[in-house]
Image (cartoon, rainbow, N blue to C red; front, side, top):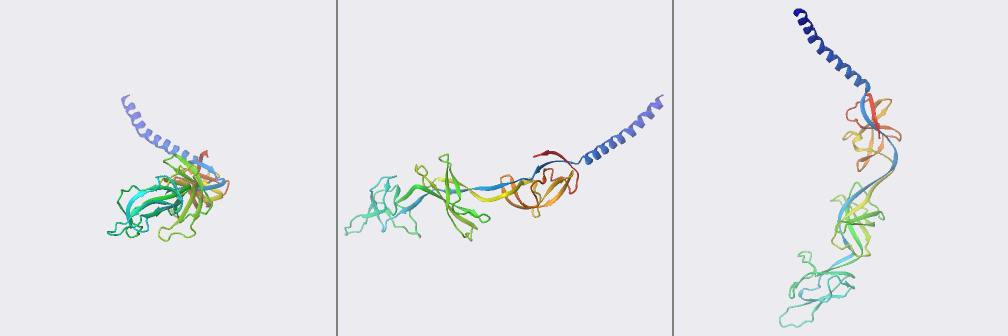
Length: 297
């Protein structure tokens, strides 16, 4: 009896592992026959707009630094900080300290109309004229701020046109203002490979002040009637391609791409409206492989 028990145990030990391996192989075949699980999307046509942000600093629509025509020692200001001044209005007096010579005080005038910001100086302090080789701070700055401007540079792969709308965010005010592009250079800077752009924003309440940090949002690219896909759907660093789903199988399709727009990528060639494109599972399928569509987005 014991002999038979031993024989049965030996047979089971030999058979069971083989059965398990057979079951696993059968399971693998079933999975292969079922295809690779994927998620797909249907290519649709719509207008695509790419918006970028640029950092800038606020300037008055007109802004100038005020220096004396000749050097002298500070006597006094004739206007108050933040006051509106006219062009050629006297804003300060200086005196020339020449032994044995009596001269009338030197009048320093504003070169433009606007709000004035005065530099803190002491009586008798020497104030020099503007010298690009040895720059001194200006005696004052004057700016027209009924409108403000922001200047920024756009990368060479984009081109901004004049008249384009823009939004300017002023973080310190927690506000966003609307304006438009006033000037845009036709040529690119040969050193930085950028296009110089100036935008203007109405500032009737005069709450935006020169020197404030600004973040400018502007449209840099547009593609009408475009097809866009999730960035991850496109594979390849140089030669780019996607996998289209058709008849329960995946097929490679070379594509030509345009600009990125958030998490999407514009497809210029290679995908037509109505095509079914794999957006999840594209990295594990092979050309002509069976697929199992689990979701359509």
